[in-house]
Amino acid sequence: MKKLSFLLPVMAVLMMASCVSTKKIVYFQDPDQIFNQGEQIMQQYEMRLKPADQVLVKVTCSEPQLLEIFSQDVTMGSNGSNTSNIGNGGLSNAYGFTVSNDGKITLPAVGVVNVAGLTTEQAARRIEESIIAAKLIKDPEVTVRLLNARVAVLGAVKSPQVVSLTSERNTILDVLSQCGDIGDTGLRQKLTLYREENGQRKKYFIDLTKADVFNNPAYYVQQNDLIYVEPNKSQSIKSSAFYTFLGAGASIVGVVASVVALVFAIK
Image 1: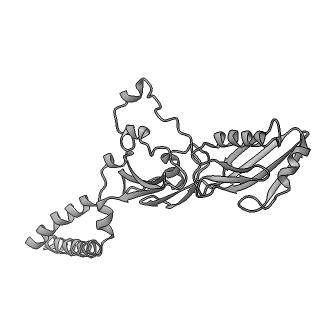
Image 2: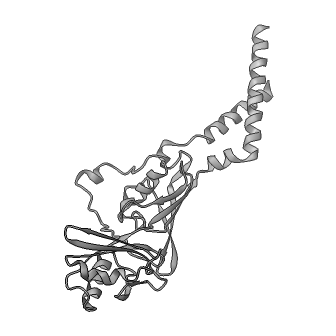
C-alpha cells in the first residue's frame, strides 16, 4: 500500500503537467482600458510587388482600335495568353505576367517596366505612364492585381496549410483563422514568422496574448511569408514514448489500486 500511496501523487503531477493554463491560450490579455479611448492604428499597410510574383495587368480605353497593338503579341506573360472583351463601347486586354528576379515585367508594345517595391496601384500608374510615353494611348486605364499571394502555416494549428490571401491587406489573424486557429497545445506567446525582404530572410516573433501585437511589423502578412506555431512542452511530453509508457503504467496501477482498495473494503 505504501508503494501505491507513493505512485498516486506522481500520477497527479503528470496529469497537471498535461493541462494547459487558460492564461496561455487567451488572446489580447492586456487591460480593457487600452481600448476604451480607441487605439491608434499605427500601420497603414499595403502589399508591395516582389520578384516571382504573378500579376494580372488589364488595359482599357474608349477606342478599341488602339488596344489591338497589345493583342498582337499574345506570347507575353506568364502563360502566354490574354483575354479580350468588348463591352460598353470599349475593349480590354488582360495579361498575366511574372515579375522577374530584377523586379521587372515586359509588356507587349510597351517594353520593360520596373514594378518591384510598388503597390499594385503604383504599378498601374507607372504602366499608364509608360503607355503614354510610348505614344500608344493618350488616356489608358490600367488595373494591376496580384494573383499568387499566399502564406504557409506550419506547427500547432488545427489545419496546417498554404493559405491563399484574399486581399492585399491580410493580418496574421486572418491567416490563422483559415487554418482553424491555433490548437490548445500551441504557444500563442511564441509564433515565428519568416519573411524575405530585400534579398534577405528575416525572423519576427509574435505574441498573440498581448494587445501590442497590432503594432508588430509582422501583424500584416506578406506574400510568401512562413508562419510557425510552436507546440508547448506538455504536447512534447505527451508525444514521447516515455509518456506513453508511463501513462499506460499509471492506468494499470490505478486499476490495481482500485481492486486492492475494494478487497480491503470487503474484508
